Structure formats: structure tokens, C-alpha cells
Length: 509
Image 1 (tube, rainbow, N blue to C red):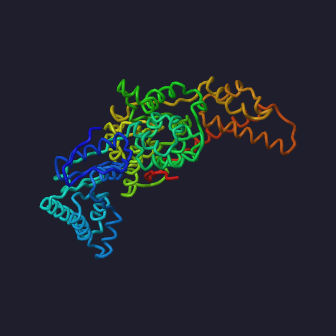
Image 2: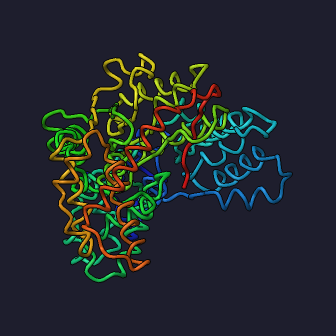
Image 3: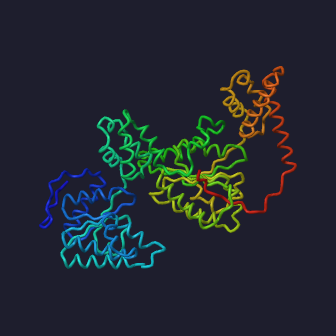
């Protein structure tokens, strides 16, 4: 790095330099250049990517005094609680009286307080900032700010330098400061970055400090820590039924489509960048009840290691708080990308949306995923009857991938039975799956699962009563007959649809 020479009163210090990641170093160089050519600078980031670290580095380079939240609170103690602007002005004035460079950290924290809904002195903070700039100009002082939101008085006067999104080299630099060299060499920071590219410096530092105490830490362990501690899904992945692609039968073409059009662009950043690949941002899984739509969602949740955000149709909603929660959910999905927003039973949800509020709101969210920063969020919906969905949802550009789940054919039914029976003890595990598959035409995957569970119960009941054992297939055939009869009764007595609107909720388990 080229060393910038500064005239007095700014003199270089001889203390050891703070190790900055490449993105932080570039921002610090921008600040140094801004203070060489002007009097005011501001460093900005969008997610705790090391503003304070950059300030500390500049402070060591140039001297001056750095003030932060603790200094402000100590000064505020001598004032009335609402005299925030006066306390801040007095604090900075006192520092400018003694130092040529004043470095002000976490300016956004004060801005959040004075912009709060209960604070009665709106815009007075900007007046205080303007007064500080005026004094600095007349006193030949330099000011450096750090914030994640630049107030207008600062934006108008200061040269800004932004900490760019972290790359794998930034991950390695930040984590490497806390890991021994052997652990650092074992970790694939490119893979870690692909898994969670939006991690900030605090999260990386926390993970590295924790894992530095574990001998033999590797990439898999690092990813597991991130999955457990940093990925903000609204669903605990441990509470999602453990399902993998290998557990699904008869949907190979659907799995291939999801792997090629969602998982691959999510996970292979190099190939995606080389070929300009983007995951489908809207996916519809359509099919009759019981054909595995929700199960596919569960498998995808585990496939993507838990970055899975669920909206389902189990609760009447539509209030302001609901929309706030949906907004937070989409924001969290973008921060934790690659991620999935999974809307289960979308036709039921939208069917009860009499005022069209939800689907219009969802349209804005889908359209908001077009930006590059949001391009790794996929919204997946399930529906039994796609014709019940609003036409605007399905138009090209929003739902880009339409997948159909069908009733399993003979081969798929046999495979499903085989997968469910093979781990059972004899004689259950030895049932002739071809016989069972041949008599279950028209059954869904859910029906087949119920047939296996009910057959086991019938077998256990005979065992408990010490009855002579029947051929094992008979237990399952009896269960299959009962399921088919229940379906006929249901069709005859099917109730009229409920006239009350069906709402939805964000599951926060």
C-alpha cells in the first residue's frame, strides 16, 4: 500500500498497525485520502463490517481523538434526559478544543434515538451537526465519522468511503486473526463464503474465537457453527421432519429441476458468475393433496442447511403487525441468502384474501428480489389448485418455475413401500411390495405412509392378543381397504367450503 504523507499537525504513529481485511483496508485508504484532500470524511457499512476497526487503524495512522457511545453517555449524564443534541455538541466541541482530528464512532446510534417516534425534537440533531461542522471549519479541525446511515449534513460535507461486501479473502483475514495457522489452512473460506456470504465482522469474529478452542476444526464444523448460531431462519431445522432427496420416490425429474435451477446457482458462485446463472426467484409446486409438496419443502430446507423461512396458512391474519413480520422475514431471507421463503398452501391463503392485500404485498416483495443483492432468495409456493391463485402471481418473471407433483405410478409405489419397510424387523420387512403396489393405484404418498403405519398397528394388536399370525401382507391390505373406504365416505359427505376467510401466519417455532 502506498503511504500517504500528511503535513503537520497529523504525524504518523509508530504503534503496530491493526490488521485489516482487504475490504476494510480499501475503506481505510479512502478515508486517509479524503482527510489528505479535505477536512471531513465518513466511513460507512451496511452490516457491522468493521467501521470501528477502520477508525482504530486511521486513529493510529493520524493521531487525533476517538469518541464513541460511552463518551457520549458520560457527557449526557450531566444534562437533562432529552438534551441529547446539547450533550453531543458539547462533547465534540470539547474534543475539537484539544485535538486537530476528532473521530466520531457509531453516529447512527444517536441518529436512531433522535429519530424515534417518541422523541419530540425532530431534526434538531441535524442542526447540532451543522454547528459542529461550522466550528471545525473556523477552527481548522478535521472530522471523521462512522455510521451505517449518513445524515444529510454529513453527506453534504464529508467524503464518504464504504466498506464493500466481504469476499472470501476478508473472511480468511478476519477469522485468521483468532485461529492458529494449521486451522486456518484447513478451512475452505471460499466454501464458507458461498454458504453465508452476508456474515459481518462480528459474526465471523465470534465464530473464530469459539472454534479456536476446538482442535481439528474444519470447514464442515465451521459451517455447522454458522448454521446453529448465525442463520436467522424462523424455523428450527431440528423441528423439520428429517427428509432428504433420497427419501423421495417417483419425483426424480422434480429433484433434478430443483438441483439445477435453485441449488446449483445458490452454491456454485464461480460457475454462476462465469455463466451468469441466477436461481429461479419464484417456484410453484402444484399437485393434488398428499403428493409430497410440503415434504419436498422439508427436504429442500435440509438440503440448504436450514436457511428456510416459512409462511403457512394456519391462522387468520392481515393486520399491520403481520405485514411487519412478513417484511422482517424477507429482510432476514436476503441477509441470509442463499435462502428459501416457503409459502405452504398458497391457494388456501390467497383464497381467503378477500381484499387482495396479501398477494399484492407479495408481488412487491417478489419484484424486490430482482436486485443483485437479493438475487439469491427463492420464493417457493405450494398449491393444490393453481387456478385459485391470482393470475398476477403466476405471470412470467415472478413464478419462473412450475413443477407438478403427481400421484405415484406402480414403480414409484413399490419403491415407496420398499423404502418404508426395509428397516422393519421380520416379518413386516419381508412383505411383498409388488402386491401392495398393485392394489394402491390412485393412492398418494401420504396414503401409502398411512397404510404402512396402520398395517404395523394391526400387526402389533394381533401380537398383543397372542393371535395366530396372518400372512404379513394381509395387515397392510386391511389398512389399504380401510383407507380406500374412508376416502369414499369423505367424498360423499364432503362439507361445503367454509365461508370465513382463511388467513395465514408466520411460523416462529
